[in-house]
Amino acid sequence: MKKLDKLQNVITAMITPFDENLVIDEQKYREFIRFQIDNGCQPLTMGTTGESATLSHAEHHDAMNIAIDEGKKSGKDPFILAGAGSNSTKESISLCQYAEEAGADGCLVVVPYYNKPMQHSLIDHFSAVADSVSLPIIIYNVPSRTGRNMEPETLSKLAYKKDNIVGVKCASGDIDQITRIIKTTPDDFIILSGDDGLTYHIMALGGKGVISVASNIIPAKLVEFTSTMLNGNWEKARKMQFELYDLFKVLFIETNPSPVKFCAEVMGLMNKRMRLPLTPPLEENQEKIRKVLKTLNLI
Image (cartoon, rainbow, N blue to C red; front, top):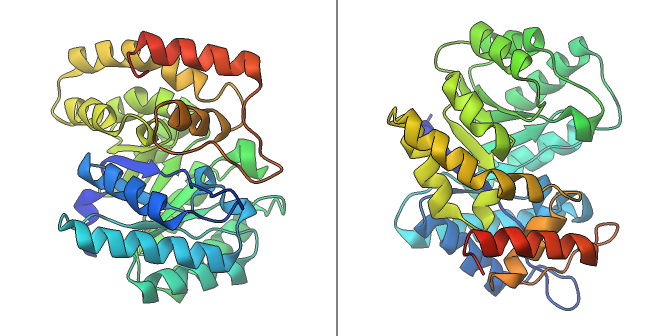
């Protein structure tokens, strides 16, 4: 599978710019994609940080097309990862197939939310999705959002069963579970942090990088952070972990992506408009966010 070596360092879970009518602002989206690529990040379009749950499948398609087009124009051959998860297997297959036809390089597929499928049902779901395309698939396990945790044993079975299930975005917050995943999956299985604050810990265990929220606003710094660890300079990385810690925490002071979208506005990257039921942070939390940004000289 092409370009899998690019699934390391930083993949940005990109936020989505909206115009005054809450329609995707294509020009700003293109600018933002190039900002990520030019700073060494691989773009993830229509992940949950991109407010995918509030956008139609037609809008998902449009976002994929824009990212693929900008990737080609960049001349840097980025890995375009398409968010293609759903709580409906049929819908997830449809999104993955569209991503493949459009020219995406891989799909991020979340554990089905709300339905709370059993572990054996998760195997059937992800097997059906994997069988529907030839693209590499990264599984996204985020039980705080989905209501169902994918157990390490389930993930291991899928990793050995399906050649195009190539990795996992770990957002369980459970280091013991992540340790078991790394121990029980194939050596070339790609382990990515799904939590900026745990990237240091996960990479110390053998993870290859992060699918990041923070890189929306500090892409080059996050690439420096992960590269430092991949190069084995753990003392420098430890210092960077403490330097960035307050930012990692404040980005989740309210439901993601509300804080990072507010950061993007005050830093001049895009407006903070969001589709209901998501809203910008409360004023008291905006002040806390500003304080952290000022400390890091980001505003």
